Image (tube, rainbow, N blue to C red; front, side, top):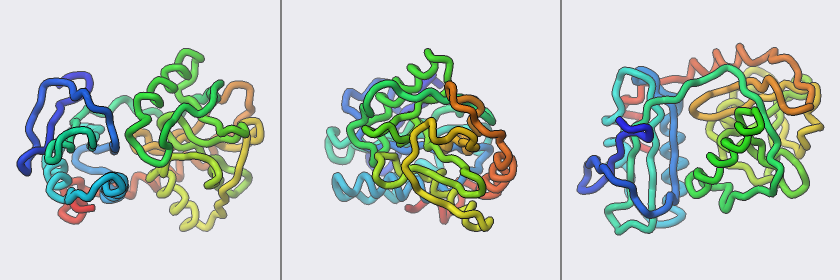
Length: 264
């Protein structure tokens, strides 16, 4: 397996291995964590992917999803990615990359991006992946794990490859719809869990400095919930709720081979 994983193209109703780079750009992509055959709400990832593809052209993706589920090993930790590339010929637009999961951590540090939001379409996962990977590498050069994208008014919009949320007292907060943030499945789940546990939730505009004294989280399909341990000169609160919510999130794992998870 290469660093980028084994690569397959879905043609003729099956996944066929390919050993060369595809020159066309990503139109839609989605990824999720699979650990020993179990994953979280894979059907939501398939639904998000399907919804984005359908906005471009009509596709029956059920056979593709079934092939992907069957191709993921039942042992080990994996971070598979499905892709749609609209510039390819019809019948040759779907791809699957089977990748080993990177290291996961409980906490991370943040760095606020010092330039305008460079993304071209924040509502679709795929077109901006390479740009966001560069933003994360830029954060790494500043000694941080993740870059925080700000909107034109300086409000928190998104992490480069994650969703940023925070606790103000007992209220779980996230950016509101006036900011450009990628619809995040993990964010969706975390807010559902908070509501089910009786916590209030809110969607508000906030600048990084407004979050002084708040417990801050970075959310993603790969990492789940990571507590923010450091954010430049912003004093971050202790991670009081991190452990309990990570346990709740772990309870949502299901077998990735279940029949009801293979169709969006």
